[in-house]
Length: 180
Image 1 (cartoon, rainbow, N blue to C red):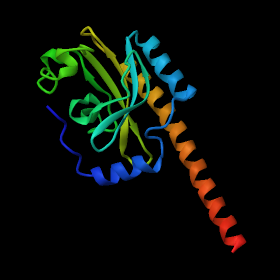
Image 2 (image 1 turned 135 degrees about the horizontal axis):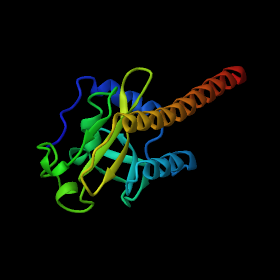
Image 3 (image 1 turned 60 degrees about the vertical axis):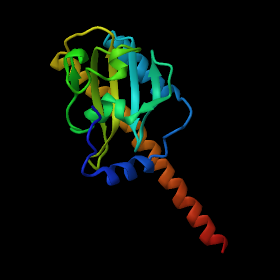
Image 4 (image 1 turned 180 degrees about the vertical axis):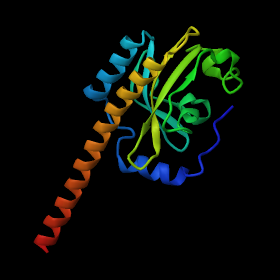
């Protein structure tokens, strides 16, 4: 069952584009976060997922060898509906949103999912930092808070990068104006 489109989807997508991160190469900082998430939560899969108009694109992935999936299949497209809360699916085979999802019924055989939204200062969720397992499991409130903390680190890095891009653009404009 695909996630419904958010009422503020146009604003969310515009904000996602402003970070200029989609389709960029792998970066050690983000790879370190997914590595740590996988180890901390003992899951075979950890992702930094950005939900674009038609796809879910992975800025970083541990345990999954595809760069993206269609948005209709994305657990993360459901998780961004509440940018303030970690979405936990203890057993996807029993969740009506996911029980017929090909990512559940075939490889990678998702059973457990926990996704912390990557929330911007504007309140939009760009995607998630998520951990995934092939077995059903519980997720404690302390674990949810730990995943949220790692997601905040991801957002801090993205915010810093966007600030540097904005500064660079302003410098280019100033230099162009001075040369004219």
